[in-house]
Length: 173
Image (cartoon, rainbow, N blue to C red):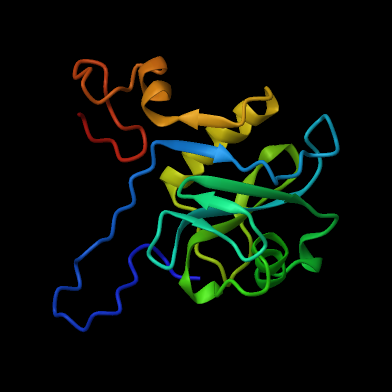
């Protein structure tokens, strides 16, 4: 699994950052619902950004994915799961994990979001924010969060200059 900033070029420009535009965060239809209605079920999730340079792709087992998809799986114990096992279960054995750009996380009891393990990248503040918003929507049987619509509803829309301040980075719009 690669981070979004990995670059195979040997250019001297190490400050290059790749960007993937996401309009909507979405719980993928193959996701599991928490079995416990009080949200005490532990889950593991995968955030999809890109596969083999594409922001929309179809897996070897026929699952269609796109940037912003989040796939959730229920697990009894996090120690029983490794990312590669989860990846193969979701995407099939022929998808090369080295070409996948995404992140893995666990949702503990009561919705606390953490990195899956010490080997997976940390969940960034922006990912944490949108995952929390998405999981809150999922509890209300809404499977997506439209970023622009959400920002307008929360008075954080980028064109509303007198009301916009990024809570994540503290920069006024």
